[in-house]
Amino acid sequence: MRKYTLNIYKDLEEASRAAANEVVTVLQRAIFERDRATLALSGGSTPKRLYELLAGDPFRGKVDWPKVHFFWGDERPVPPDHPQSNYRMAKEALLGPLQIADDHIHRLKGEERDRNAAAEAYQNEIAAVLGVSAIGEPPVLDVTLLGLGEDGHTASLFPATPALLETQQWVVNNPVLKLDCDRLTMTPMLINRSANIFFLVSGSQKAKPLAAVLEGPVDTQRLPAQLIRPARGKLIWFVDKDAATGLSKQQKG
Ligand code: 6PG
Image (cartoon, rainbow, N blue to C red; front, side, top):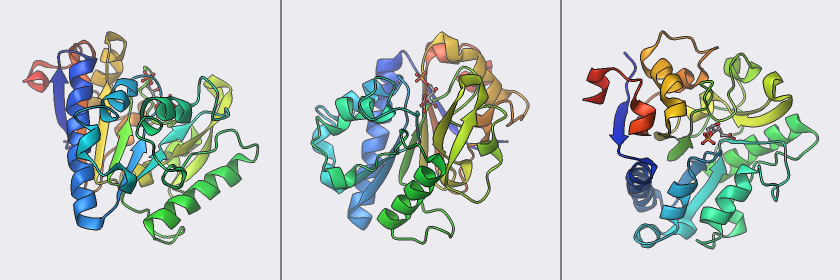
């Protein structure tokens, strides 16, 4: 039985607010314990409201934001000012409004032509910030945020792509044939070391993949989000009612 907490909310606003509360709690504790916190952001459109909430009252005033280091779970092969850039969305919704210093923003350089070099450089950057060797066991990020694609992908771990089988690197360039592009992505071995993994899932179009991931047979090549099983950390799904319609009665409580 996979261990996770499933919280179902009226809508994306409520789910985002609940997730913001949880993110703030974890960041506050990390800063209290180690005077630093690490947060890996997810891309796509779902987390935008969460980022806006974190950048505004009351959440803005609850975290010593200059002590938070920001990373990305994945990035598209576009420059940072591109409308499709995960960095750009987070910069506009969260990092800019919070006036986060550049040295605490660790951008995954999706636009780099040498994509393996970009992935390696990012792994080295994560290691340097977390104060660990870049060739040892992956470090523990305090919070990793994730979304769920309609095909069951998360981060840029798409069905039947090489990154699903990666057991050495924490960050890789992942060729995604169906998108006809390469994506840079954290691998399951890094994500699963996180102390807290929060999925934020909204909308009826996610009902089928969510039910398949949580209740269907394990088939990680077809449903890569099933690879997300934290070793020791907490896994919480923040979903809205529309996304939860495919779940069994007992899941819904
Ligand atoms: C990305 C994301 C990806 C996203 C899902 C859901 O770069 O697209 O990292 O994993 O979380 O595709 O995207 P939406 O929130 O837009 O539905």
